Image (cartoon, rainbow, N blue to C red; front, side, top):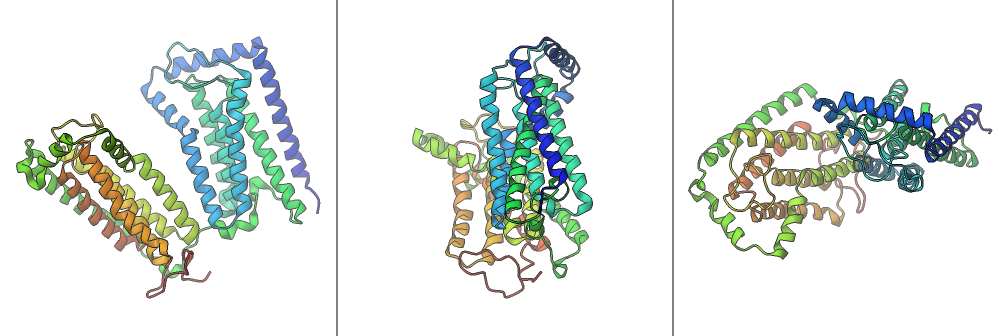
Length: 476
């Protein structure tokens, strides 16, 4: 077996990008006038075009966040989780090595070069640290390309070229957004891209050499991925005999949403009309005042954590992990669709009912300050109930391991912790919590009936052996 000519050309290309990056470092360090002139001219022109438009500033900020550490770290964690559960350890190592390498290269090179960020007439964003190279450009290219190379075999051949184009466009947009926001020069972005191509190329070449020494053929990574043999393990399946009418499920979901929304409005509007505590129904006035009178530093710290584990970012993080584990372990789309519909429905029901009901917060000190939404129902509590009960619903019938009991316990304990914390901090009445329970119960039951997340398990099948999640009750 021999290395293909295309592999040699790729290695030459990666060497060329490394050379380009080296030349850019020299030019930045010596402050080469022609490059500095172009950099500053583009920065000023883009600032004059983008800064006056709130829409463009918001749009560029949103695109830029797709290249932030917070977004990409979760993508890599989810990707690594998927391939680890499918026992593709080399692919997991490739993901971790490439992304960690980018995280090391970015700050160290920024410190070594020491270039200051652009100074524009109308600043619309602020970047931390030095300017060269662009960390968003570098790490977005590394992260999204690494994920592409790992999961490309799971796509059908006709979609692979589309995926490559989409990833290339996304990386280009992220780099452009950093220019448009005035936090990087053009040479910073090009430097980040060139270093990213060189690094991902080095890692991919190392992976190919490993395959070569193991007696396997050298691949074409951008056409078939790093590990074409892993396609069956990476690709989810859905047995034909468990498919149900999508049209009925969508129509039923809309009907369930409307009825759940109606129930929340019917409960919430009478409560919102009585600003004086609505007659102290379910101790709506007594409980917030009692908590306000018994606050302490220690309980305050406990309540902060309890409140934070129910916020949007924490629930999103937990949901991403549950979705990744479900897809990798069960290899079915249905559990993931169940998770997505449950959580998206909760969010829309909460926002819609809170806007219509418009209930005031308790008349005590609101320790979390002004909030953009009203008091009824509690979004923190509803999201916490649904995320943990969804996990329990998905896992419980698939294993008889002792640890499955942990999920029902968490499904009860976590919402209680969040509910008490929110009332302690003066953010909700007890009846707000009741509204969250109503929302969660109605919506979860409806989605379980419509989506049937455990349809791949034949009726009456016993759970999997201890320590194992059941892959499927259907042969493939």
